[in-house]
Image (cartoon, rainbow, N blue to C red; front, side, top):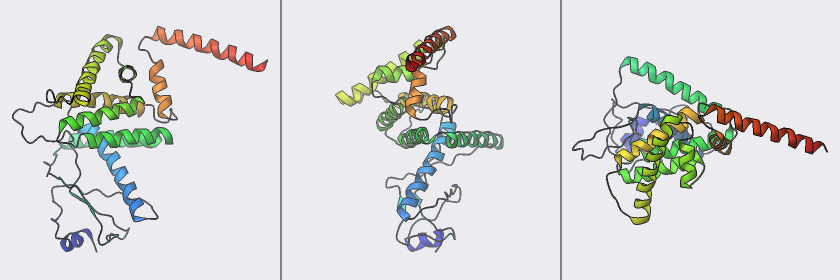
Length: 282
């Protein structure tokens, strides 16, 4: 039984012709494991698309629909199939309970070519990441794309802050902010730290006081900016170099935009290595 016939037997609405159908091929010994694997890699791919396609800022005037930030969203139903195309389990399918139909994203041909190149590069970089490092980056991507599926921007804001905690490997505010802003140029770093401090205050007011405060849409876009930088311009840029997230944040802890400061640290570390090697030989 193919997908179309399956939908008919379940009295489900047929696939929309203006939506893109995506297939993920996995090997597995069980149906549940196959679904988990396929769903995970689909979400990783979708998150990379969203990092590339989501707006960094939007003005939403009189917008009562509370649209998600993500430009690429899941369809209402997902089904599991054998290689032959037949539905793997006649009574099993997944669906989004509070699904709302999304407006199709139309891209120009030039934009499609550019996006295609970018996504291929991101996927290759993700695949080059070493196992432990890739697992953490995958977790961050998974949380990110689900955070910005939300229509409630307070939920989006809190979930996206969790992504920053994953990428900076800490829930300590001062360390998180220092690591998230580590690679900014010296002339802009103070400004970026101020923005992060404002985001921290907003999170604290909502979590500890239950104060909804101002609409956090802009704050969501601000957090997305730092998530984008930490994933695309840092972790994927150094794909294959770090063994794990601990090494990644260790790099950030030692990084300085001032070359002289880095050379000073290197001189001290080199001296410590030489002295330590001498002591080992004694």
